Image (cartoon, rainbow over all chains, first blue to last red; front, side, top):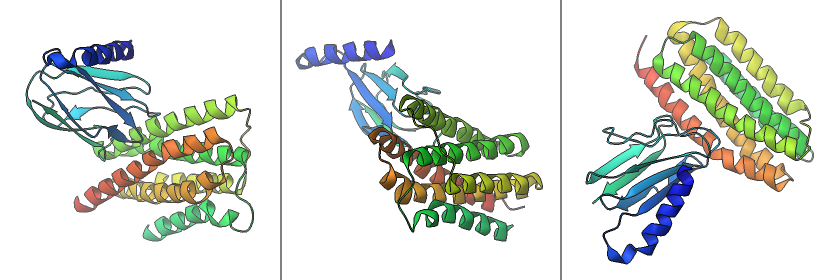
Length: 105
Length: 177
């Protein structure tokens, strides 16, 4: 369900990219204990989707709790709309070796 | 305690590599039994630690091991069922089970900080040994492409668990007591 929304969002984002105003949807894949891409820059209003391709739960949790997915089950996803500009270091709250960065401009 | 820990690690390392040194590596049914046993042993240790530890950090780690290794075993079991591979008990899987049983017996005699340290020390040794086995024996020996792919897919989890266990080990070392 969320994935379908995410993918249609990607399509919509690509379709109107040149207009420069329509929000886009960005996908971060969690697989092999990594966020891919590890570092992502988006515009305010864009949606970011994390899809968990590992065999156990992960989270996407920013340091200041600007966003927190809580547990994302295997093959499930979580998304949020990045409304506040900033540079967010985030990680998996369950696996402290996993790190990512989201920049909202 | 230190002696037990080193001996336990040595047993695991032996189980991981030396048993296959003289002949061909394990077959796919044997690899399946090794994978399932390795995960189950760590789930059992995690259940004991979750019940017995008084440290929030250690109990969280233990729950993570139960969840993650449970997830790996669920996928491994689904895969071997689909492939009609029946896990075949072998010297390595038996050695892992015995090592796990000995670890549980040793841990049951401890409490407090001594328990936490012994559990976490063993987690470090266990994940290092399993990682060595995955790299040196299991991935190179796996014949079925999907079984090999599953091993490659779960390898980063063992690396991350090892790093996590080492962080925990360092933090327990600093806490004194």
